[in-house]
Image (tube, rainbow, N blue to C red; front, side, top):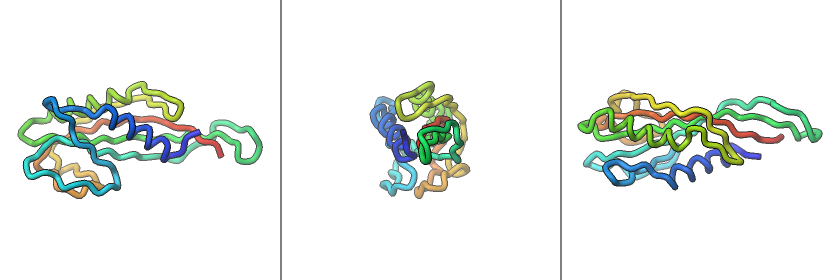
Length: 153
């Protein structure tokens, strides 16, 4: 069965193995809770990823004490930033590339169900709480991917 850390590692590994590109170059990936390099003086595209879990629910009894099956809903929010003067469509294209990686994706650890692209607009108005750098020189869209993972306990 899968823990929250295991589910996060699957997501991270899949995204890092399939880094989206912009104008032919791979974009930078930034992760929730990790201190990254400051944003460059000349704005460049990047993706900031948050992994959010909700309380699990009991979906099966078995195996005696500690053997119950729990389903844990979770979500990936991948904030896709592009330089402001590129326009919002570049941000939504980048978010679409991320969403495509997780639409109907399933392995032995996680099951993804839907992935939507949500245009957000100017970066300063939606700065994610864990991102330390200023993003007012950027436009953004988010790829929001819903998934679940099962655990036993």
